[in-house]
Length: 150
Image 1 (cartoon, rainbow, N blue to C red):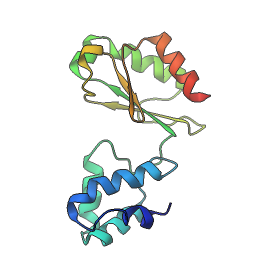
Image 2: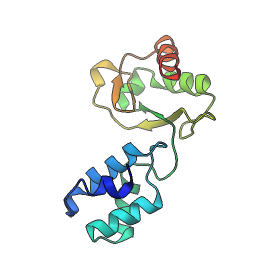
Image 3: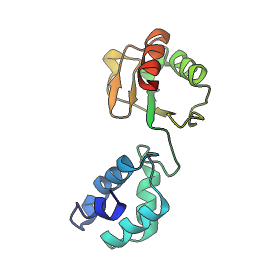
């Protein structure tokens, strides 16, 4: 589906901006917003490109650079920190052979951090794309990576 086809699923009203950006990013094989997509969105909503870019840059769920097929967002809130999320991040970096903010060479995984996933009672937690995984430890991380790597 083209960017234009995605955009036209929404009424050309400014309050649809976030939904449009999410839909565009979700349909891109590299999970990001291209400059062309931001320009098309701005034209469609009759907004400046800089205002659309500003929204995309402000929200951490949007990316302006290519990412992997699976986005791993690890919660680093104070509660997750108390539950030793630093060992989760270290295990993911070791297993994936990347640092936070990077994408694996095969383009499968991107590792990001998130301030809060709202899962404090089941910390430490992370999301893989839109699904949350809780009570993480090295064993569970190995299982998840194997499962998603196929």
